[in-house]
Each structure stands twice: as C-alpha cells, then as structure tokens.
Image 1 (cartoon, rainbow, N blue to C red):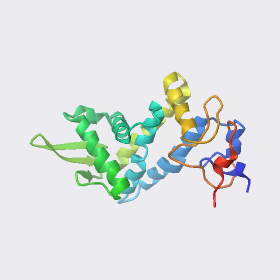
Image 2: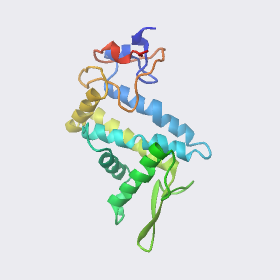
Image 3: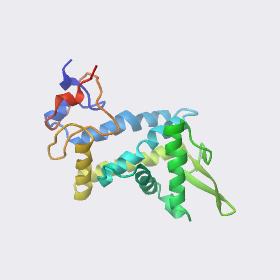
Image 4: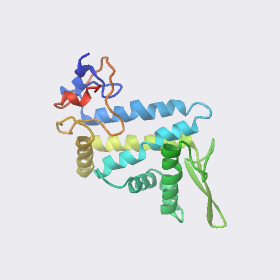
Length: 225
C-alpha cells in the first residue's frame, strides 16, 4: 500500500495534502468533525448515551485551547478551565466561576479520562441547559449537564473557530493555529503549515478523496513493527 494513500482524516489523503489541493485548516476541520464530533452527534440520538457523548465532547476542550492560544506546553488544567469558561459563558455568570471550572476539570475531564466515569458532583439530565449549577444555602450542590446540548455548544464553538481561521481577519489566531499545526504533526507546511493534530493521528485506511497541501516526511505515517 502506498503511504500517499493513507488518510489524514475520513476525507483527505496524505497525497492530497502534499499536492496542496486542500489546506491544513480543511484537514484539521475534517479530523475533528469526521473522527470525533460527528460520531458524538450520532451517539447523542441514542438513549443512555450521555457518558459516551461527554467523553467525545470533553476531549475537544483542552486541545482546541492549545490551538487557539498557541501555548504548546501550557498546563492542562488551566487550558481546560479557560476553554470551558469560554465555551460555556454561563459559568462566568455564577458567583464562583473559577471553582465551577475547577470542579468540571476534576469531576468531568479527570473523571472521564482517569476514572472512566463522571464524579459525584455531576448529574446527567435529559433536558434543560447544557450546564446548570445548582446551589443550596449558597453552596454548590450539583452541576447538571445535558450531554446533547453540551455537545451542541462544543460544535458551535468549533464551527465559529474554523470560520474565524478561514476569514483570516485575526492574524494572531491564525499564527497560533499554524504554530500548533507544526508542533503536533510531522508535515512541513505551505501558507498554513500542514500537519496532523494531537487529537487524531493518521489512519492506515486507503481510499479515494478529493483534496491536498504541503511537503511531507513519509515516515511520519509509517507503521512500526
């Protein structure tokens, strides 16, 4: 199998990226949508899918903040908390935004990815707002999460981010994206620096696709024995 036939995401191959038929922004968008968020959207239609949906949606928050900020080695907790407060501005409307963000980092992000489930202060609900903070006697009693609407907010944020990148109006945002694009892969870039994200590695699939970009080190995509 030719390495150039390997897919960078569901839609585009290494060959297409190398031939500059697509930009790194195109590849990045289809990686995040095609390998993560679109599957989360399908799952959200199924009963009792809340935990699985949250695992996929929550995985978006920290990496996207690295791309937005260009902070390659920043603290994971700070990135996550900044991201969750930006995507869910209702957190900042509470009297304790930093505490709420910290609980979400510990009980949502760390719970899902280190313990396999959300922790006790979080409650999944089938209806209502994406995130709702419940207080009792001025103390936090629970954070209720509607997983489907949580995902919806994440998808809106990603759509807005891609639109901002494509508009080219915010040069700093684009520079930060390019910095992370170079840091997280092995493809050398054109005007947008092409390369795979830390969210999603190259796949060994073969198939046809319809687009490309920059010069590539083929060994970046070779499987090792």
